[in-house]
Image (cartoon, chains in turn green, red):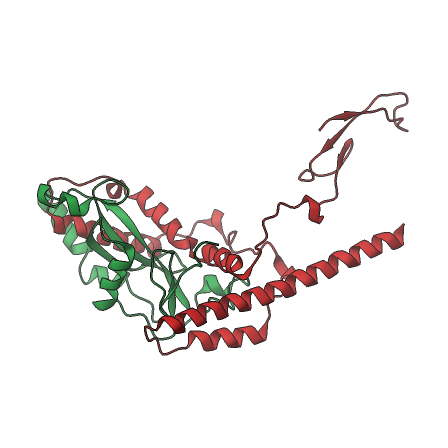
Amino acid sequence: MSSYFKAMLFIFSSAPFYTKYIQFPTGEHTPAKIQSNPKILPYFRNAIGAIDGSHVPNAPPAHLCGQYCNWKGFLSQNALFICNFDLKFTYILTGWEGSATDAWVYDNAISTDLSIPAGKYLLADAGYPLCPQLLVPYCSV
Amino acid sequence: MLATHFVHSSLSHTVAFDTILQSGARPMYGMFITYYPMVPYNLTPSRPLNREELFNLRHASARNVIERIFGIIKHRFHILLLPLEYCSLEVQSRIPASLAAIYNFIHINEEPDPDSSDASNEDPCGDKCPYQAGSSVAVVADAGGGDGGRDDLEARSMWDNLAQCMWDDYQLILSAHQDLLDDTESELDFDQ
């Protein structure tokens, strides 16, 4: 049972299944959800999705528990998710310790395999750095 | 609030009616008296007061898609809520990625739900919101079309530009709305 679970897990999380169903947008077309909403169309025309981190509980070996303890107080891994406006995931980066911040995970993603098309950006929350690829809200208003 | 007084009705003579003063959320008919809706002193003061607040409001409403998708995937796959013991770290780190791929597979291949057809796409403001604003669109397009360099100053100017465009358009809409209200009031005065 365990070996079958593991085999299926590896099938689902690697090519060709994974690469077929999780594709990062090229940003050629403005998403339909943005186009249909006149309140945000002119302003977020170049947005290609939203980005956020989520803590997924996990069980690390005992000597790593310190690193995997997050600010909420439980053991977790910090997973970075990007989704588009059609409610589909377009990028996932998992496996970071729970103590890593969202900005750190994003920094790692952008320095490895995440590439955002020029002129496009993602909608992020206040935990992310201010840079041309991320649109973050104003703090303390 | 409850008030009682006597009304001499033409339909039933010498009958005491209870008249209930109630909130404007209910329709006005029969014995219920509602106040005029949409007058400024009745509205909850929830309007954004400056461009930063307006930007954050629009930003949050556009960004809530990711919070929704987290809710969906964690509700659908309860394995994401529980620590998976007796598995290596690599296996545990592959679980969210594979579930996201499975989620996308389901999302692409499932039958569309006939009950949830385009209800979320309706704009409550409808044609009342003249979000044309051609000039600001051009400005935003320029701001978004930078070279993508990691320059904080560039990002900040783009950000402020966007918020300023939003705020200017919002002021236009507010003044248009105010004109509409004034017209309605003057018509009412004329009728009286």
